[in-house]
Length: 205
Image 1 (cartoon, rainbow, N blue to C red):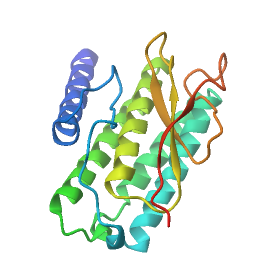
Image 2: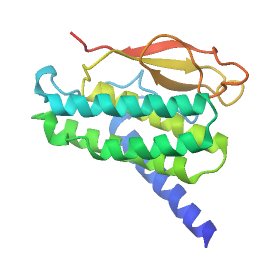
Image 3: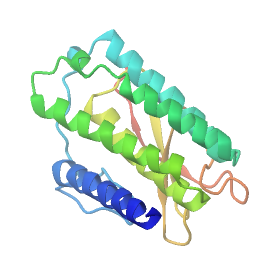
Image 4: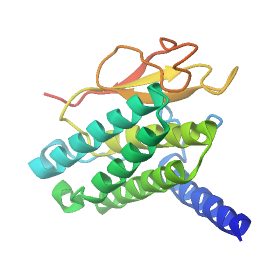
C-alpha cells in the first residue's frame, strides 16, 4: 500500500512539473533536476497592477522560505518540516486577485507555480532522507524564482545563488537569498561558502 501511495505522489509531482515546464519553459532545456530560466521569456505582470496585500504576501512567503533555508543550513530535521508547513500555509494565503492583471495568462501561470511549490513542500514534509528533502528544496527555489519574475516582485531585491556541486560533481542547484552572502543550504557542513550569485530579481524602484 505504501508503494502505491509513493508511486501516486511521484506521478502527480511529475505531472505538475510537466505542466509548469510545458507552459513556462518551452523555449529552453532544463538542467538535471533544475528548472532553469535563463532561456525563457515569460509573460510578466505590469509594474502597477499589484496591490499592497499581494506584495506583502509574497514578502511573507520569502521570509518563510528564508527560515526553511536556514533549517537546511543547520541540518535541523524538525525545523525543515516546521518551516515547510509554514511556507505551505503562507502560499495558501497569497491573494491572486491582488495582482489585478489584465492578462489572464499571468494569473494562471502564477497559480500553477504556487501549486507546484506546494507539491514540492508536501514531498519535503513526507520524505525522511536529506537528499530527497534537498531535491525538493531545489525545486521550490527554482519555481519561486520564476514566480518572482512572473509577478515582477518589487518588495526587495532577491538574489539567485548557485552551488556548482550541490548533489555531486556537475550537479548544480540554486537557492534564493535576500543578500549576496553565500550560505550554502545543500552542503553546509563541508562547503558552507561554496557558491556564487547567478542572477537576481530587482524590480524595486
